[in-house]
Image (cartoon, rainbow, N blue to C red; front, side, top):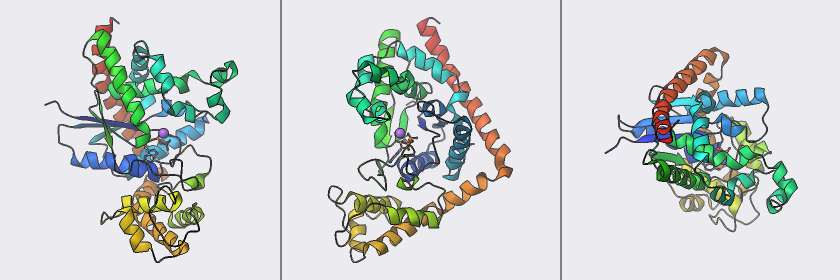
Length: 346
Ligand code: ADP
Ligand code: NA
C-alpha cells in the first residue's frame, strides 16, 4: 500500500483560537505523534488565502509569525512535520491555474463559504446584480481552487480539518477528477479526516462558528490568552437565564457550547451530558468559573511555549524553521509539477 501523506493549512489572520486548536491543531499534533515512519506530514500557513480579504502588510507578517509559533507550541516538531508559508512555494499558484482550466464554474458558484466572507449581507441576495458582482473579488470567488491546489500538490491522502472545510475537500476531489479525466490519473484524491470537535461556536453568537475573522475579539479564546482574560471572556459569553446547567444545543446554544468545549478538553473523556449533570447544581457564575479553569489549565503548556517562542531571542529560530520547511515543501511540490507539466504539455 502507498505511504500516507497528511496535509492541512491554517490562515494567518490572527492568533489561532480554541476552535482552531480543538478542530484542527490538536489533531495535527496527534497525527504526527501516531504516524508511521513512512507517513509524510505537511502543515501550511496559507498566507495567499489570507489576502482574499484586505490585510495590512505589517499585521499580516506578524500574524504569520504568531501562527508559526502556535503550530510549534501545540507540539508540532519541525524535524518530523514540514511547516511552511504557502507563498514561499510558487507551485501552489501554478497548479491553481492549471486546475482552473479544467474545474467547473458552476460547481464553484454553488459553494457557500465565499459568500459568507462578503461584508454586506445584501451582496449575497443581490449577487445577480451588476454592482454586487463588481464588488466581488475574483480571488475570493476562486480560492477553493487554490485550496485544491494546496492539497493536490503534495499528493495528500488525508486532510485533517474542521466541519467548515468539508465542502472544500469535496471540491478538491472534483478538481482532481476533472484534471485526471482530461490528462490521465496523475492527481491523488484526498480523504477528509474530521476531529471530534467539528465545530466550536462563537462565545458571543453561539449560532456561528468561532472564527478569527469575527470583529469582536471577545467571541473567541486565543491559545495565548492568560487565565484573567479567559475569565473575562467566559463571563461575557452569551448564556441564558434558565435554571441549572443542561446540554440542549437547540434551546441553550451558549451553555451547550461551553459544555461541549469542556468535554473536548476533558482528560477523563466525559461527554457534554455527563459534565452537565456534574455541574447541574451550580449557578451560572460558578459554572463559568469551572469552564474558565478547564480552558485555562488545558491551554497552559501551549500558552507558555507560545510566549517563549514569541520572545525576541527566538526570531532566528522561527525564521530558520520556516525557511527549511519551505525548501522541503518546494522539493516535494516540484515532483508533482514535473508530472503535471509533462501530461499537460508545458
Ligand atoms: P478561521 O475560520 O478561524 O479563520 P481557518 O480558516 O484558518 O480558521 O481554519 C483552520 C482550521 O481550523 C481548519 O481546519 C478549520 O476547519 C478549523 N476550524 C476553524 N474554525 C473552527 C471552529 N470554530 N471549530 C472547529 N474547527 C475550526
Ligand atoms: Na475558515
